[in-house]
Amino acid sequence: MEDVARLARVSHQTVSRVLNAHPHVSARTRLRVERAIADLGYRRNTAARSLVTRRSQVIGVLGAGMGQYGPAHTLLGVQHAARGHGYSVSVANLSSVTPAGIRDALEHFMVQSVDGIVVIAPHQAMLASLRGLAGSTPLVAVGFSAGERLSTAAVDQRAGAALVVQHLLDLGHRTIAHVSGPPDWIDAAARVDGWRRTLEQAGLQGAPLLEGDWSAGSGYRAGLALAVEGTATAVFAANDQMALGALRAFKEAGLRVPEDISVAGFDDQPEAAYVIPPLTTVKHDFELLGARCLRMLLSDMEHGPSGRASVIMPELVVRGSTAAARP
Image 1: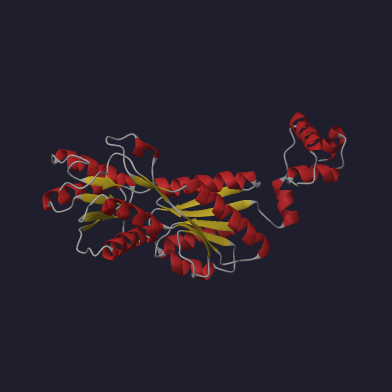
Image 2: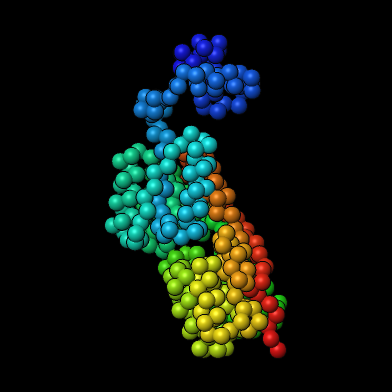
């Protein structure tokens, strides 16, 4: 740092301010310091810095189902925001959400002395472990509801489901089936609840509910079953992958989408706009969700656990897979 300061003709403290993104440094001075850093190939000694600051500059991310579109892109949002604040990310992905797996992952983070943890695993089995950790380590959980004594960031899943179902009701559909995610996933349960409540508010009950596992294969099997059952005029799938599986099933069964049956998904994956017909779905910004988690975590690291809840509202994207119900 002294070499950088000498080359840039500034003080040691000014170099430190530039490295720590301090706002009270002029643009001209910051550029001169950054050029000196590049010319000298300077790298901070993170081990020495950790001894001084008592921080590892590492954020732990505990995830499950990270192969799915939503969790993976939420992780990208966390990683991008973390880099912008000088943090690296250590990821532990659970193949199955069990108490032993959660315990091992959290122990791994403790050994690394992470400064805080983001949990991207909205699963019922996760709650007990997180309650035990709350207060000892700064932590933000994605997808959990407020009132869990945790800082949480989430998309309003019920509101998203209600948007889809109301759209289909407005098109004249009265038997709207739902293909859900696994029931022990909090997002899946909330989407079922939003679907059911919206139908009940319209005076409708008894629509088919089929359980999927987030995969296109489970959506395909559900679509075949609905084609045989024959009462539904519209299907709301709890994610786009299952909706895509249902589209193929209906094609094989000789049903036209949307003329014979409407199909809607959830998540707005990039492929959703390019299938035939383009998929009506619910859009929410996963990377914004990840960035918001990181901001909340940094605040809790600085000021202590807040127990705050941040909610992002989704929006409906209407495309060609939904149309008015046939008389």
